[in-house]
Amino acid sequence: MCAVRGLVKTYPAARGRRGGGAADVRASDGIDLDVRGGEIFGLLGPNGAGKTTLVRQLTGLLRPDEGSVDLLGHDLVRHPERAARLVGYLGQESTALDELTVALAAETTGRLRGLSLAAARAERDDVLDELGLGPLAGRPLKKLSGGQRRLACFAAALVGERPLLVLDEPTTGMDPAARRAVWAAVDRRRAEKGTTVLLVTHNVIEAETVLDRVAVLERGRIIACDTPAGLKELVGDEVRVDLVWRAEPPLDVPEVAALRGAARETGRRWSLRLAPAEARAAVAAVTGGPAFAALDDFTLATPSLEDVYLALGGGLAQGLVKG
Ligand SMILES: Nc1ncnc2c1ncn2[C@@H]1O[C@H](COP(=O)(O)OP(=O)(O)OP(=O)(O)O)[C@@H](O)[C@H]1O
Image (cartoon, rainbow, N blue to C red; front, side, top):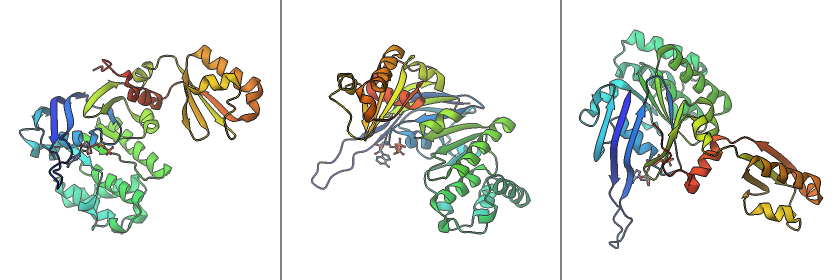
């Protein structure tokens, strides 16, 4: 469906007034990627990893310095204008549509994508209905809340179907009902029309439930690429132990002091990834002895995609990229 090879994009350094300034940013640093037809493929990575830069090259909006992008047999580096017929893109900002009402934004997108007026209006009505946007249809986008505006932009991106949907953080700012509507709409298009979806996200928990495969991007490179389950195997059979202390952790208890080195601390919470036997011992130590009085709550869980993500950030990834 979409094959990317050797993609490189460097942003030139901003020149400081005193001649100094930062170095060039290699935002795509030799990216190879294959997205298969009909899959929901996620791009995950920290701020500044190069996710948006990558998807803008896949949608013909940004020209790579090197490398190739083949989308359904079209060379998008040579013919970026062809992307408009192949890709429905929801970017991070909506300024182009802001003056329009929700209904007109959806209808106009359909018209720009070549639908007749009647077809654009019919699709507009279906999509607004599907996403529960009917009551907001007559409101200008710029007068909506952030989450409502995002949902309206998503609705517009769906009108005048395209074989590939590229969604850059689609659910940012949305409440749970709107998020659910988005994922249901994505799933429906995949099931009924075989639409392929490329999704940029920070939300690993959401990603885990909707994605078929995930690529983790860091500093312009893909450091891992697999199914969520495959990625989770990277952290083996480790168990996640979360301990929440009432106030200060009882460091005078030797077992607690010993756990501290392995814990990631967030406020009163300690998160640890331990082998099953170690996890059992840790839980026995904090629930059995004098530490128990200081404990507010604890949980034991198998690894989530978030654990993998954090482990990858810790350098687990060398040589673990799978096709
Ligand atoms: N127009 C630009 N000019 C110069 N540098 C840029 C430009 N756009 C992005 N960058 C830099 O390129 C790198 C990748 O940015 P990009 O926006 O692709 O990251 P991202 O993974 O999408 O981040 P986020 O999660 O914050 O949206 C960053 O270091 C960023 O500062």
